[in-house]
Image (cartoon, rainbow, N blue to C red; front, side, top):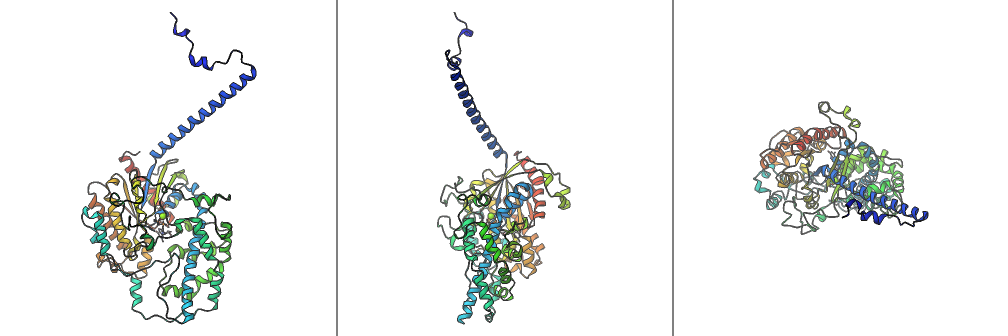
Length: 556
Ligand SMILES: Nc1nc2c(ncn2[C@@H]2O[C@H](COP(=O)(O)OP(=O)(O)OP(=O)(O)O)[C@@H](O)[C@H]2O)c(=O)[nH]1
Ligand SMILES: [Mg+2]
Protein backbone atom coordinates (compact mmCIF):
# COMPACT_ATOMS: atom_id res chain seq x y z
CA UNK A 1 0.00 0.00 0.00
CA UNK A 2 1.31 3.52 -0.97
CA UNK A 3 0.84 6.59 1.21
CA UNK A 4 -0.70 9.69 -0.41
CA UNK A 5 2.41 11.71 0.41
CA UNK A 6 4.25 9.49 -1.97
CA UNK A 7 1.82 10.29 -4.87
CA UNK A 8 3.06 13.13 -7.02
CA UNK A 9 0.70 16.09 -7.52
CA UNK A 10 -0.38 15.89 -11.23
CA UNK A 11 -0.23 19.70 -11.67
CA UNK A 12 3.33 19.88 -10.36
CA UNK A 13 4.18 17.06 -12.72
CA UNK A 14 2.75 19.10 -15.61
CA UNK A 15 4.51 22.29 -14.60
CA UNK A 16 7.80 20.59 -13.90
CA UNK A 17 10.54 21.74 -16.24
CA UNK A 18 11.78 19.02 -18.57
CA UNK A 19 14.81 17.27 -17.12
CA UNK A 20 16.99 18.16 -20.14
CA UNK A 21 16.01 21.91 -20.15
CA UNK A 22 18.78 24.20 -21.41
CA UNK A 23 19.55 27.57 -19.78
CA UNK A 24 17.99 29.38 -22.75
CA UNK A 25 14.82 27.29 -22.58
CA UNK A 26 14.63 27.94 -18.85
CA UNK A 27 14.78 31.73 -19.33
CA UNK A 28 12.08 31.59 -22.02
CA UNK A 29 9.85 29.45 -19.78
CA UNK A 30 10.27 31.78 -16.78
CA UNK A 31 9.46 34.87 -18.81
CA UNK A 32 6.33 33.16 -20.26
CA UNK A 33 5.22 32.27 -16.74
CA UNK A 34 5.79 35.85 -15.56
CA UNK A 35 3.74 37.23 -18.47
CA UNK A 36 0.90 34.77 -17.78
CA UNK A 37 0.87 35.86 -14.14
CA UNK A 38 0.82 39.54 -15.13
CA UNK A 39 -2.21 38.99 -17.41
CA UNK A 40 -3.99 36.96 -14.73
CA UNK A 41 -3.34 39.67 -12.09
CA UNK A 42 -4.62 42.28 -14.50
CA UNK A 43 -7.86 40.35 -15.01
CA UNK A 44 -8.29 39.94 -11.24
CA UNK A 45 -7.70 43.66 -10.77
CA UNK A 46 -10.29 44.47 -13.46
CA UNK A 47 -12.87 42.25 -11.74
CA UNK A 48 -12.08 43.82 -8.36
CA UNK A 49 -12.41 47.37 -9.81
CA UNK A 50 -15.69 46.49 -11.53
CA UNK A 51 -17.10 45.07 -8.29
CA UNK A 52 -15.98 48.16 -6.37
CA UNK A 53 -17.56 50.43 -8.99
CA UNK A 54 -20.82 48.45 -8.83
CA UNK A 55 -20.82 48.65 -5.05
CA UNK A 56 -20.07 52.37 -5.20
CA UNK A 57 -22.88 52.88 -7.69
CA UNK A 58 -25.22 50.88 -5.45
CA UNK A 59 -24.12 52.87 -2.41
CA UNK A 60 -24.29 56.23 -4.19
CA UNK A 61 -27.22 58.47 -3.37
CA UNK A 62 -29.35 58.84 -6.49
CA UNK A 63 -31.09 62.14 -6.97
CA UNK A 64 -33.56 62.82 -9.74
CA UNK A 65 -34.20 66.39 -10.86
CA UNK A 66 -37.78 66.76 -12.10
CA UNK A 67 -39.92 69.63 -13.33
CA UNK A 68 -41.17 71.20 -16.54
CA UNK A 69 -38.85 72.62 -19.18
CA UNK A 70 -37.01 75.80 -18.13
CA UNK A 71 -37.85 75.22 -14.49
CA UNK A 72 -34.16 75.39 -13.55
CA UNK A 73 -33.14 71.70 -13.24
CA UNK A 74 -29.87 71.97 -15.13
CA UNK A 75 -29.10 75.23 -13.34
CA UNK A 76 -29.60 73.45 -10.02
CA UNK A 77 -27.26 70.70 -11.19
CA UNK A 78 -24.59 73.33 -11.90
CA UNK A 79 -25.09 74.63 -8.35
CA UNK A 80 -24.55 71.08 -7.06
CA UNK A 81 -21.27 70.87 -8.93
CA UNK A 82 -20.11 74.30 -7.79
CA UNK A 83 -21.01 73.64 -4.15
CA UNK A 84 -19.95 70.05 -3.62
CA UNK A 85 -17.23 69.45 -6.22
CA UNK A 86 -15.68 72.90 -6.81
CA UNK A 87 -12.35 71.59 -8.12
CA UNK A 88 -13.96 69.34 -10.73
CA UNK A 89 -16.21 72.27 -11.64
CA UNK A 90 -13.18 74.43 -12.49
CA UNK A 91 -12.40 72.14 -15.40
CA UNK A 92 -15.97 72.16 -16.68
CA UNK A 93 -16.71 75.87 -16.44
CA UNK A 94 -14.86 76.90 -19.59
CA UNK A 95 -16.86 74.47 -21.74
CA UNK A 96 -19.98 76.59 -21.15
CA UNK A 97 -18.50 79.46 -23.13
CA UNK A 98 -19.95 78.12 -26.40
CA UNK A 99 -23.45 77.94 -24.86
CA UNK A 100 -23.20 81.51 -23.60
CA UNK A 101 -22.05 82.64 -27.03
CA UNK A 102 -25.01 80.87 -28.63
CA UNK A 103 -27.46 82.51 -26.18
CA UNK A 104 -25.97 85.92 -27.01
CA UNK A 105 -25.81 85.45 -30.77
CA UNK A 106 -29.32 84.03 -30.93
CA UNK A 107 -30.71 87.05 -29.07
CA UNK A 108 -28.94 89.40 -31.50
CA UNK A 109 -30.32 87.47 -34.48
CA UNK A 110 -33.83 87.63 -33.02
CA UNK A 111 -33.51 91.41 -32.74
CA UNK A 112 -32.15 91.60 -36.29
CA UNK A 113 -35.09 89.54 -37.59
CA UNK A 114 -37.53 91.89 -35.91
CA UNK A 115 -35.72 94.92 -37.23
CA UNK A 116 -35.56 93.51 -40.77
CA UNK A 117 -39.31 92.83 -40.81
CA UNK A 118 -40.10 96.31 -39.52
CA UNK A 119 -37.76 98.05 -41.95
CA UNK A 120 -39.21 96.06 -44.85
CA UNK A 121 -42.68 97.18 -43.81
CA UNK A 122 -41.47 100.76 -43.58
CA UNK A 123 -39.88 100.55 -47.03
CA UNK A 124 -43.03 99.25 -48.70
CA UNK A 125 -45.28 101.53 -46.60
CA UNK A 126 -47.56 98.61 -45.91
CA UNK A 127 -49.29 98.52 -42.51
CA UNK A 128 -47.04 96.94 -39.84
CA UNK A 129 -47.30 93.17 -39.44
CA UNK A 130 -48.43 91.88 -36.04
CA UNK A 131 -46.32 88.76 -35.71
CA UNK A 132 -42.60 88.47 -35.97
CA UNK A 133 -40.85 85.28 -37.00
CA UNK A 134 -37.32 84.37 -36.08
CA UNK A 135 -35.23 81.93 -34.15
CA UNK A 136 -35.38 81.20 -30.43
CA UNK A 137 -35.69 83.71 -27.67
CA UNK A 138 -39.34 84.60 -28.23
CA UNK A 139 -42.02 83.54 -25.82
CA UNK A 140 -45.32 83.68 -27.67
CA UNK A 141 -48.37 84.58 -25.67
CA UNK A 142 -51.68 83.51 -27.16
CA UNK A 143 -55.06 84.31 -25.60
CA UNK A 144 -56.27 82.13 -22.78
CA UNK A 145 -58.54 82.46 -19.75
CA UNK A 146 -57.30 82.36 -16.16
CA UNK A 147 -57.02 79.08 -14.24
CA UNK A 148 -57.66 78.07 -10.68
CA UNK A 149 -55.56 75.81 -8.48
CA UNK A 150 -58.75 74.97 -6.63
CA UNK A 151 -59.82 73.10 -9.74
CA UNK A 152 -56.65 71.03 -9.36
CA UNK A 153 -57.48 69.89 -5.83
CA UNK A 154 -59.79 66.89 -6.32
CA UNK A 155 -59.41 63.27 -5.26
CA UNK A 156 -56.52 60.95 -5.79
CA UNK A 157 -58.63 59.47 -8.60
CA UNK A 158 -58.26 62.75 -10.42
CA UNK A 159 -54.65 61.95 -11.14
CA UNK A 160 -55.53 59.91 -14.17
CA UNK A 161 -54.90 60.88 -17.70
CA UNK A 162 -58.47 61.61 -18.70
CA UNK A 163 -58.64 64.14 -15.92
CA UNK A 164 -55.50 65.86 -17.16
CA UNK A 165 -57.14 66.14 -20.51
CA UNK A 166 -60.20 67.62 -18.84
CA UNK A 167 -58.05 70.17 -17.03
CA UNK A 168 -56.23 70.93 -20.22
CA UNK A 169 -59.63 71.76 -21.72
CA UNK A 170 -60.49 74.00 -18.78
CA UNK A 171 -57.37 76.05 -19.44
CA UNK A 172 -57.46 75.62 -23.16
CA UNK A 173 -57.65 79.32 -23.56
CA UNK A 174 -55.70 80.89 -20.72
CA UNK A 175 -55.10 84.46 -21.68
CA UNK A 176 -52.22 86.79 -22.24
CA UNK A 177 -52.04 90.03 -20.39
CA UNK A 178 -49.78 91.69 -22.94
CA UNK A 179 -51.82 90.62 -25.94
CA UNK A 180 -55.01 91.88 -24.34
CA UNK A 181 -53.64 95.31 -23.56
CA UNK A 182 -52.30 95.76 -27.09
CA UNK A 183 -55.67 94.99 -28.65
CA UNK A 184 -57.27 98.08 -27.19
CA UNK A 185 -54.80 100.42 -28.94
CA UNK A 186 -54.61 101.63 -32.54
CA UNK A 187 -51.37 100.58 -34.29
CA UNK A 188 -48.64 103.17 -33.54
CA UNK A 189 -46.83 105.09 -36.26
CA UNK A 190 -43.84 103.44 -37.95
CA UNK A 191 -40.53 103.95 -36.17
CA UNK A 192 -38.05 106.16 -38.11
CA UNK A 193 -35.22 103.72 -38.70
CA UNK A 194 -32.25 105.13 -40.63
CA UNK A 195 -29.25 104.02 -42.68
CA UNK A 196 -27.36 103.51 -39.39
CA UNK A 197 -29.71 100.60 -38.69
CA UNK A 198 -29.14 99.21 -42.18
CA UNK A 199 -25.38 99.35 -41.61
CA UNK A 200 -25.77 97.60 -38.25
CA UNK A 201 -27.79 94.84 -39.89
CA UNK A 202 -25.08 94.36 -42.50
CA UNK A 203 -22.17 94.36 -40.09
CA UNK A 204 -23.88 91.87 -37.79
CA UNK A 205 -24.84 89.52 -40.65
CA UNK A 206 -21.89 87.12 -39.95
CA UNK A 207 -23.63 86.17 -36.70
CA UNK A 208 -26.12 84.08 -38.73
CA UNK A 209 -23.53 81.48 -39.66
CA UNK A 210 -22.08 81.67 -36.14
CA UNK A 211 -25.47 80.64 -34.74
CA UNK A 212 -25.69 77.75 -37.21
CA UNK A 213 -22.20 76.55 -36.34
CA UNK A 214 -22.70 76.77 -32.59
CA UNK A 215 -25.97 74.88 -32.89
CA UNK A 216 -24.29 72.14 -34.90
CA UNK A 217 -21.57 71.96 -32.28
CA UNK A 218 -23.88 71.85 -29.26
CA UNK A 219 -26.36 69.37 -30.70
CA UNK A 220 -30.09 68.92 -30.27
CA UNK A 221 -30.29 70.74 -26.92
CA UNK A 222 -29.51 74.00 -28.69
CA UNK A 223 -32.99 74.05 -30.21
CA UNK A 224 -35.96 74.83 -28.04
CA UNK A 225 -39.04 72.60 -28.29
CA UNK A 226 -41.98 74.34 -29.88
CA UNK A 227 -45.61 73.51 -30.44
CA UNK A 228 -44.89 71.94 -33.85
CA UNK A 229 -42.27 69.56 -32.41
CA UNK A 230 -44.71 68.64 -29.69
CA UNK A 231 -47.09 67.26 -32.27
CA UNK A 232 -44.36 64.96 -33.55
CA UNK A 233 -45.75 61.79 -32.16
CA UNK A 234 -49.33 60.66 -32.15
CA UNK A 235 -48.15 57.89 -29.89
CA UNK A 236 -47.03 60.01 -26.97
CA UNK A 237 -49.11 63.04 -27.80
CA UNK A 238 -48.47 65.95 -25.56
CA UNK A 239 -49.51 64.58 -22.20
CA UNK A 240 -48.54 66.21 -18.92
CA UNK A 241 -47.63 62.97 -17.20
CA UNK A 242 -47.03 60.23 -19.79
CA UNK A 243 -45.15 58.21 -17.15
CA UNK A 244 -48.48 57.64 -15.35
CA UNK A 245 -50.09 56.04 -18.36
CA UNK A 246 -47.08 54.49 -19.96
CA UNK A 247 -48.55 50.98 -19.99
CA UNK A 248 -51.50 52.28 -22.01
CA UNK A 249 -49.66 54.56 -24.37
CA UNK A 250 -46.26 53.15 -25.22
CA UNK A 251 -43.39 55.42 -26.15
CA UNK A 252 -41.21 54.40 -29.11
CA UNK A 253 -39.06 51.98 -27.12
CA UNK A 254 -39.62 49.84 -24.08
CA UNK A 255 -41.04 52.04 -21.32
CA UNK A 256 -39.57 50.23 -18.34
CA UNK A 257 -36.01 49.87 -19.55
CA UNK A 258 -33.67 52.80 -19.93
CA UNK A 259 -33.38 53.50 -23.63
CA UNK A 260 -29.83 53.46 -24.93
CA UNK A 261 -29.82 57.00 -26.18
CA UNK A 262 -30.61 58.21 -22.70
CA UNK A 263 -28.35 58.53 -19.68
CA UNK A 264 -25.74 60.18 -21.81
CA UNK A 265 -22.98 62.61 -21.02
CA UNK A 266 -22.84 65.78 -23.05
CA UNK A 267 -20.29 65.13 -25.79
CA UNK A 268 -19.75 68.82 -26.49
CA UNK A 269 -18.29 69.33 -23.02
CA UNK A 270 -15.51 66.85 -23.72
CA UNK A 271 -15.05 68.23 -27.21
CA UNK A 272 -14.28 71.71 -25.88
CA UNK A 273 -11.40 70.40 -23.80
CA UNK A 274 -10.16 68.04 -26.49
CA UNK A 275 -8.73 70.03 -29.35
CA UNK A 276 -7.57 67.13 -31.49
CA UNK A 277 -9.13 67.07 -34.93
CA UNK A 278 -11.72 64.43 -35.58
CA UNK A 279 -12.84 64.07 -31.97
CA UNK A 280 -14.76 67.35 -31.90
CA UNK A 281 -18.05 67.95 -33.64
CA UNK A 282 -17.31 69.68 -36.96
CA UNK A 283 -18.17 73.32 -37.48
CA UNK A 284 -19.49 73.85 -40.98
CA UNK A 285 -18.30 77.38 -41.67
CA UNK A 286 -15.65 78.25 -39.10
CA UNK A 287 -12.46 76.32 -38.56
CA UNK A 288 -12.84 76.02 -34.79
CA UNK A 289 -14.39 77.57 -31.67
CA UNK A 290 -11.57 80.13 -31.48
CA UNK A 291 -12.49 81.59 -34.84
CA UNK A 292 -16.14 81.71 -33.72
CA UNK A 293 -14.99 83.67 -30.66
CA UNK A 294 -13.01 86.08 -32.89
CA UNK A 295 -16.02 86.82 -35.10
CA UNK A 296 -18.16 87.53 -32.02
CA UNK A 297 -15.45 89.77 -30.56
CA UNK A 298 -15.31 91.65 -33.86
CA UNK A 299 -19.03 92.38 -33.54
CA UNK A 300 -18.83 93.66 -29.94
CA UNK A 301 -19.33 97.36 -30.59
CA UNK A 302 -22.11 96.82 -33.11
CA UNK A 303 -23.97 94.50 -30.73
CA UNK A 304 -23.69 97.16 -28.04
CA UNK A 305 -24.94 99.82 -30.44
CA UNK A 306 -27.92 97.65 -31.47
CA UNK A 307 -28.88 96.78 -27.89
CA UNK A 308 -28.58 100.36 -26.65
CA UNK A 309 -30.47 101.91 -29.54
CA UNK A 310 -33.66 103.56 -28.27
CA UNK A 311 -35.62 102.86 -31.47
CA UNK A 312 -34.69 99.18 -31.34
CA UNK A 313 -35.76 99.00 -27.69
CA UNK A 314 -39.06 100.66 -28.58
CA UNK A 315 -39.56 98.16 -31.42
CA UNK A 316 -38.99 95.20 -29.09
CA UNK A 317 -41.47 96.70 -26.64
CA UNK A 318 -44.11 97.31 -29.29
CA UNK A 319 -43.76 93.88 -30.84
CA UNK A 320 -43.79 92.30 -27.39
CA UNK A 321 -40.60 90.41 -28.17
CA UNK A 322 -39.71 88.75 -24.92
CA UNK A 323 -36.09 87.70 -25.09
CA UNK A 324 -35.00 84.88 -22.83
CA UNK A 325 -33.87 86.14 -19.42
CA UNK A 326 -30.37 84.87 -19.99
CA UNK A 327 -30.28 86.73 -23.32
CA UNK A 328 -30.98 90.06 -21.65
CA UNK A 329 -28.23 89.38 -19.10
CA UNK A 330 -25.69 88.54 -21.81
CA UNK A 331 -26.62 91.57 -23.92
CA UNK A 332 -26.14 93.77 -20.87
CA UNK A 333 -22.68 92.22 -20.35
CA UNK A 334 -21.61 92.05 -24.00
CA UNK A 335 -18.56 94.20 -23.37
CA UNK A 336 -17.16 91.41 -21.21
CA UNK A 337 -18.45 88.39 -23.16
CA UNK A 338 -17.60 89.39 -26.74
CA UNK A 339 -13.84 89.22 -26.19
CA UNK A 340 -11.29 86.74 -27.51
CA UNK A 341 -9.93 85.98 -24.04
CA UNK A 342 -13.38 85.58 -22.47
CA UNK A 343 -13.65 82.95 -19.73
CA UNK A 344 -17.11 82.72 -18.13
CA UNK A 345 -17.67 83.34 -14.43
CA UNK A 346 -19.90 81.06 -12.35
CA UNK A 347 -22.63 83.70 -12.57
CA UNK A 348 -22.43 83.70 -16.36
CA UNK A 349 -22.68 79.91 -16.49
CA UNK A 350 -25.73 79.83 -14.20
CA UNK A 351 -27.53 81.99 -16.78
CA UNK A 352 -26.58 79.77 -19.73
CA UNK A 353 -29.50 78.03 -21.38
CA UNK A 354 -29.12 74.70 -23.16
CA UNK A 355 -32.15 72.43 -23.22
CA UNK A 356 -31.53 68.97 -21.78
CA UNK A 357 -32.33 66.23 -24.23
CA UNK A 358 -33.00 62.77 -22.86
CA UNK A 359 -31.78 61.98 -19.37
CA UNK A 360 -28.23 62.89 -18.43
CA UNK A 361 -26.33 61.15 -15.66
CA UNK A 362 -23.84 63.17 -13.62
CA UNK A 363 -21.59 61.71 -10.94
CA UNK A 364 -20.63 64.12 -8.23
CA UNK A 365 -17.87 63.13 -5.86
CA UNK A 366 -17.90 65.36 -2.80
CA UNK A 367 -14.69 67.25 -2.31
CA UNK A 368 -13.33 68.29 1.06
CA UNK A 369 -16.03 70.30 2.77
CA UNK A 370 -13.38 72.65 4.13
CA UNK A 371 -13.39 74.08 0.60
CA UNK A 372 -17.07 75.03 0.80
CA UNK A 373 -17.74 78.70 1.06
CA UNK A 374 -19.55 78.20 4.35
CA UNK A 375 -18.12 81.34 5.88
CA UNK A 376 -20.00 83.48 3.41
CA UNK A 377 -23.34 81.85 4.11
CA UNK A 378 -26.13 82.85 6.40
CA UNK A 379 -26.43 82.07 10.08
CA UNK A 380 -28.36 78.96 9.20
CA UNK A 381 -25.16 77.27 8.07
CA UNK A 382 -23.31 77.84 11.31
CA UNK A 383 -26.08 76.04 13.18
CA UNK A 384 -25.81 72.91 11.01
CA UNK A 385 -23.89 69.84 12.07
CA UNK A 386 -21.78 70.01 8.91
CA UNK A 387 -20.30 66.61 8.16
CA UNK A 388 -17.20 65.96 6.10
CA UNK A 389 -18.44 63.81 3.25
CA UNK A 390 -15.17 63.70 1.34
CA UNK A 391 -15.26 61.08 -1.42
CA UNK A 392 -18.97 60.30 -1.14
CA UNK A 393 -20.58 59.93 -4.52
CA UNK A 394 -24.00 61.11 -5.66
CA UNK A 395 -25.53 60.33 -8.99
CA UNK A 396 -27.70 63.17 -10.23
CA UNK A 397 -30.07 62.53 -13.14
CA UNK A 398 -30.99 65.66 -15.07
CA UNK A 399 -33.99 65.12 -17.32
CA UNK A 400 -35.52 67.01 -20.22
CA UNK A 401 -38.69 68.62 -18.85
CA UNK A 402 -40.86 69.32 -21.90
CA UNK A 403 -44.02 67.24 -22.26
CA UNK A 404 -42.49 65.40 -25.21
CA UNK A 405 -39.57 64.21 -23.03
CA UNK A 406 -41.38 63.09 -19.90
CA UNK A 407 -42.09 59.53 -21.00
CA UNK A 408 -38.36 58.87 -20.45
CA UNK A 409 -38.54 59.63 -16.72
CA UNK A 410 -40.20 56.44 -15.57
CA UNK A 411 -37.21 54.04 -15.67
CA UNK A 412 -35.37 56.35 -13.26
CA UNK A 413 -38.08 56.20 -10.60
CA UNK A 414 -37.16 52.68 -9.51
CA UNK A 415 -33.91 53.35 -7.67
CA UNK A 416 -34.14 57.08 -6.91
CA UNK A 417 -33.58 58.06 -3.28
CA UNK A 418 -34.40 61.72 -3.64
CA UNK A 419 -36.59 63.74 -5.99
CA UNK A 420 -35.80 67.41 -6.31
CA UNK A 421 -38.84 68.94 -7.96
CA UNK A 422 -38.55 72.41 -9.50
CA UNK A 423 -41.62 74.55 -10.00
CA UNK A 424 -40.92 77.96 -11.55
CA UNK A 425 -43.37 80.23 -9.74
CA UNK A 426 -42.72 83.28 -11.90
CA UNK A 427 -44.55 81.78 -14.85
CA UNK A 428 -48.15 82.20 -13.66
CA UNK A 429 -48.76 84.35 -16.77
CA UNK A 430 -46.92 82.16 -19.31
CA UNK A 431 -47.87 79.23 -21.53
CA UNK A 432 -45.92 76.07 -22.32
CA UNK A 433 -43.77 76.39 -25.43
CA UNK A 434 -44.79 72.88 -26.48
CA UNK A 435 -48.48 73.56 -25.97
CA UNK A 436 -49.49 77.23 -25.89
CA UNK A 437 -52.94 76.32 -24.57
CA UNK A 438 -51.52 75.29 -21.21
CA UNK A 439 -50.56 77.68 -18.44
CA UNK A 440 -47.08 76.84 -17.14
CA UNK A 441 -47.92 77.08 -13.46
CA UNK A 442 -50.89 74.80 -13.92
CA UNK A 443 -48.65 72.30 -15.69
CA UNK A 444 -46.33 72.33 -12.65
CA UNK A 445 -49.25 71.55 -10.36
CA UNK A 446 -50.37 68.64 -12.56
CA UNK A 447 -46.81 67.26 -12.53
CA UNK A 448 -46.38 67.73 -8.78
CA UNK A 449 -49.62 65.94 -8.03
CA UNK A 450 -48.58 63.02 -10.19
CA UNK A 451 -45.12 62.78 -8.59
CA UNK A 452 -46.32 62.91 -4.98
CA UNK A 453 -49.01 60.32 -5.64
CA UNK A 454 -46.71 57.91 -7.50
CA UNK A 455 -46.45 54.56 -5.73
CA UNK A 456 -43.02 53.99 -7.26
CA UNK A 457 -41.74 57.08 -5.46
CA UNK A 458 -43.34 56.29 -2.11
CA UNK A 459 -39.96 55.78 -0.38
CA UNK A 460 -38.27 58.81 -1.90
CA UNK A 461 -37.65 62.05 -0.11
CA UNK A 462 -39.39 64.68 -2.21
CA UNK A 463 -38.09 68.22 -2.02
CA UNK A 464 -39.75 71.16 -3.74
CA UNK A 465 -37.91 74.22 -5.04
CA UNK A 466 -40.36 77.03 -5.78
CA UNK A 467 -37.91 78.58 -8.19
CA UNK A 468 -37.44 81.86 -10.07
CA UNK A 469 -38.54 83.97 -7.11
CA UNK A 470 -36.38 86.84 -8.44
CA UNK A 471 -38.34 86.90 -11.69
CA UNK A 472 -41.65 86.66 -9.83
CA UNK A 473 -40.78 89.70 -7.71
CA UNK A 474 -39.72 91.65 -10.77
CA UNK A 475 -42.88 90.75 -12.68
CA UNK A 476 -45.22 91.79 -9.89
CA UNK A 477 -43.25 94.97 -9.31
CA UNK A 478 -43.79 95.80 -12.99
CA UNK A 479 -47.53 95.50 -12.62
CA UNK A 480 -48.55 91.89 -13.31
CA UNK A 481 -51.73 91.01 -11.46
CA UNK A 482 -51.88 87.43 -10.23
CA UNK A 483 -55.64 87.06 -10.02
CA UNK A 484 -55.97 87.91 -13.74
CA UNK A 485 -54.31 84.57 -14.42
CA UNK A 486 -55.28 82.54 -11.39
CA UNK A 487 -58.83 83.07 -10.27
CA UNK A 488 -58.39 81.02 -7.08
CA UNK A 489 -55.98 83.66 -5.76
CA UNK A 490 -58.96 85.97 -5.27
CA UNK A 491 -58.54 89.26 -3.46
CA UNK A 492 -55.32 88.37 -1.63
CA UNK A 493 -52.51 90.93 -1.60
CA UNK A 494 -50.83 91.18 -5.00
CA UNK A 495 -47.27 90.73 -3.74
CA UNK A 496 -44.56 88.17 -4.49
CA UNK A 497 -44.35 87.26 -0.81
CA UNK A 498 -48.07 86.63 -0.34
CA UNK A 499 -48.39 84.78 -3.64
CA UNK A 500 -45.46 82.51 -2.73
CA UNK A 501 -47.05 81.75 0.63
CA UNK A 502 -50.28 80.90 -1.15
CA UNK A 503 -48.53 78.59 -3.64
CA UNK A 504 -46.60 76.89 -0.85
CA UNK A 505 -49.89 75.98 0.83
CA UNK A 506 -51.29 74.69 -2.46
CA UNK A 507 -48.27 72.43 -3.08
CA UNK A 508 -48.29 71.26 0.53
CA UNK A 509 -52.04 70.60 0.39
CA UNK A 510 -51.63 68.36 -2.65
CA UNK A 511 -48.87 66.37 -0.96
CA UNK A 512 -50.96 65.85 2.16
CA UNK A 513 -53.97 64.90 0.10
CA UNK A 514 -52.14 62.11 -1.65
CA UNK A 515 -49.91 60.88 1.14
CA UNK A 516 -51.59 61.81 4.38
CA UNK A 517 -49.63 59.27 6.45
CA UNK A 518 -46.07 60.39 7.04
CA UNK A 519 -44.23 62.16 4.27
CA UNK A 520 -43.03 65.58 5.45
CA UNK A 521 -43.24 68.58 3.15
CA UNK A 522 -39.91 70.21 2.30
CA UNK A 523 -40.49 73.37 0.32
CA UNK A 524 -37.88 76.04 -0.43
CA UNK A 525 -38.22 79.35 -2.19
CA UNK A 526 -35.25 79.68 -4.54
CA UNK A 527 -33.62 81.70 -7.28
CA UNK A 528 -31.06 79.19 -8.45
CA UNK A 529 -29.08 81.79 -10.39
CA UNK A 530 -28.09 83.09 -6.94
CA UNK A 531 -25.14 80.83 -6.22
CA UNK A 532 -24.57 81.67 -2.56
CA UNK A 533 -28.16 81.39 -1.47
CA UNK A 534 -28.58 78.13 -3.43
CA UNK A 535 -25.42 76.66 -1.84
CA UNK A 536 -26.93 77.35 1.57
CA UNK A 537 -30.13 75.56 0.61
CA UNK A 538 -28.28 72.59 -0.91
CA UNK A 539 -26.02 72.19 2.11
CA UNK A 540 -29.02 72.32 4.41
CA UNK A 541 -30.82 69.82 2.21
CA UNK A 542 -27.90 67.41 2.26
CA UNK A 543 -26.86 67.70 5.88
CA UNK A 544 -30.25 67.79 7.45
CA UNK A 545 -33.20 66.48 5.45
CA UNK A 546 -31.41 63.88 3.39
CA UNK A 547 -29.18 62.57 6.13
CA UNK A 548 -32.27 61.88 8.23
CA UNK A 549 -34.24 60.44 5.35
CA UNK A 550 -31.51 58.14 4.08
CA UNK A 551 -30.84 56.87 7.60
CA UNK A 552 -34.49 56.27 8.25
CA UNK A 553 -34.95 54.46 4.97
CA UNK A 554 -31.85 52.38 5.73
CA UNK A 555 -29.99 53.65 2.71
CA UNK A 556 -26.90 54.50 4.80
N1 LIG B 1 -33.68 84.70 -13.31
C1 LIG B 1 -33.66 83.39 -13.10
N2 LIG B 1 -33.36 82.55 -14.12
C2 LIG B 1 -33.34 81.23 -13.86
C3 LIG B 1 -33.63 80.68 -12.58
N3 LIG B 1 -33.53 79.34 -12.66
C4 LIG B 1 -33.18 79.06 -13.92
N4 LIG B 1 -33.06 80.20 -14.65
C5 LIG B 1 -32.73 80.33 -16.07
O1 LIG B 1 -33.74 79.69 -16.81
C6 LIG B 1 -33.20 79.06 -17.96
C7 LIG B 1 -33.65 77.62 -18.01
O2 LIG B 1 -33.07 76.89 -16.94
P1 LIG B 1 -32.61 75.38 -17.11
O3 LIG B 1 -31.89 75.00 -15.85
O4 LIG B 1 -31.91 75.18 -18.39
O5 LIG B 1 -34.03 74.66 -17.17
P2 LIG B 1 -34.33 73.08 -17.23
O6 LIG B 1 -35.36 72.81 -16.20
O7 LIG B 1 -33.08 72.31 -17.13
O8 LIG B 1 -34.99 72.96 -18.67
P3 LIG B 1 -35.02 71.65 -19.66
O9 LIG B 1 -33.62 71.16 -19.81
O10 LIG B 1 -35.60 72.19 -20.92
O11 LIG B 1 -35.92 70.65 -19.01
C8 LIG B 1 -31.69 79.23 -17.87
O12 LIG B 1 -31.30 80.29 -18.71
C9 LIG B 1 -31.44 79.60 -16.42
O13 LIG B 1 -30.32 80.44 -16.25
C10 LIG B 1 -33.96 81.59 -11.52
O14 LIG B 1 -34.24 81.22 -10.39
N5 LIG B 1 -33.96 82.93 -11.84
MG1 LIG C 1 -32.11 71.08 -18.46
